[in-house]
Amino acid sequence: MLEINPNNITTKDLHQYLLSSIAPRPIALASTIDVNGVNNVSPFSFFNIFSAKPPIAIFSPARRVRDNTTKDTLENIYNIKEVVINIVNEDIIDKVITTSNDYPKEIDEFIESGLTPIASKMIKPRRVKESPVQMECKVNQIIELGNKGGAGNLIICEIILVHINHSILDKNQRIDPNKIKLVGRLGADWYCKSYEQALFQKNKNK
Image 1 (cartoon, one colour):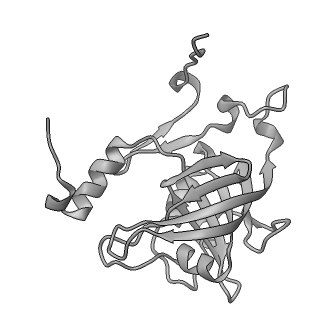
Image 2 (cartoon, helix red, strand yellow; image 1 turned 180 degrees about the vertical axis):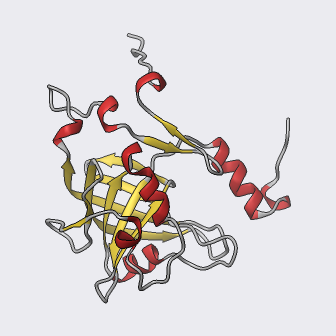
Image 3 (cartoon, one colour; image 1 turned 60 degrees about the vertical axis):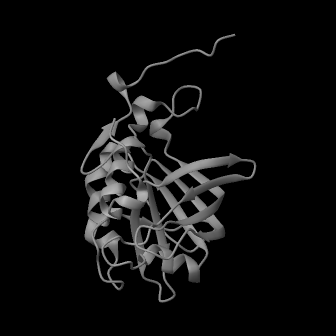
């Protein structure tokens, strides 16, 4: 087997091995706002749900490997501790990828991507209208994992309001995986679908 010591490989190469093996990963399309009222939208696949009571989701904007700079999302959250986690499905993936480009701080990614901002009910950042599930969150804590390129910053979010599009619900008002059409992030430029032929069910052993 190929053996890799993290201390003996470039961060860039290690990053790709990790992202290609720890997958598929759900994608959080995080929308924030800066102190001047400029919207920011950016996707993060270092993301998951970690608690139901309280409802806690965590995503991690990592420091850029190439130049050790931080992303606008992180800077915005340090100033305004609120964020909307918009769930990403196949219908919006192309626009979501557009938001991952490095734009100047004064650029509104809603405009660049063609996504539609709509007002949140309890926080300042805008929701993404096209997202099938939108979670308004207050940020409880930011944990810096390091100060070098590639280091993550855990954004611990408490979900205070959830918006779910009726079109993705089944007759029992549960989310139907074949209607929400979630996509997952793999390594490099790869993504995957999590519906239709990709699905299978297994019952727990009694």
